[in-house]
Amino acid sequence: MEWDPVHTTHIKNKVIMMFGPQTTSIMVVYPKGYYDVATSLKHAISKHDRLDSTLWTTEQYQQNLPTLSGKSHVIFLGTEKDCPVAKPFHDQVESVTFHEGACYAVDGPKALVFGLDAPTLEKFSEAGPDRNYVGFDGEPISFASASVEAEMEPAESAPTGQGRFGKAGWGALTGASTLMNSMASGRVAARAAEKVKGMWSASDQRIENTKTASMLFLERGLDQWLELDKESAG
Image (cartoon, helix red, strand yellow):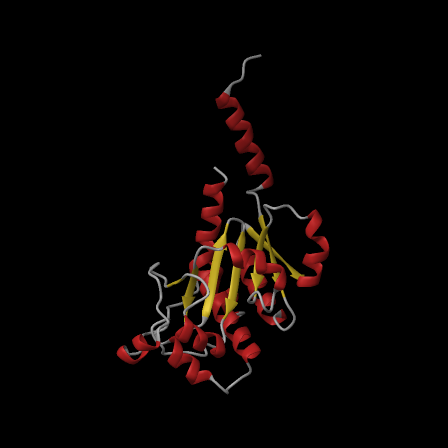
């Protein structure tokens, strides 16, 4: 019997109609102190018809790592300091999207969502960043102190909308606090660091900025991440 591509395609479409489109499962790996952020992110992701999400502590991820597929979609919350299991991916990413202390990056089926604290931003202004940070437009961000004094005009925060996740999905993340609100990202990073210095511990600052990063990733990074992963798969 000869292979009939039309007939094969028809069968495939019938299977899709019977069982529905394939659901992509995304693991959210979180360290201690990030449970609330992880729960909100999981809820927002699961609002999408073709996405599902599960929560894993860093300990659970470490224990099951030998049996996990390299193609598993994983979002790691926190910096490599807070989430050591994500360090290999932090080391490999080519660029990180930065906005007012909130950061995210993607590398194949892995994504990083984290926040920076005031001491780190101060360090960047003095010695330079530890990797390539870019704005939403893809342009490199300067953390130099000189640019802080030269550009004092505040910029509006990145717009966030409900998008396809709906009101309930975004409502789960409305507690996110932008510590450096009304500050232009990157160009006034040092001044932003000075603004929040002493308000919370460095750990608290990283968690709060990770909340903001979660919102930005949902709105701006999630689609890009999944599309890039599909393209890389051919």
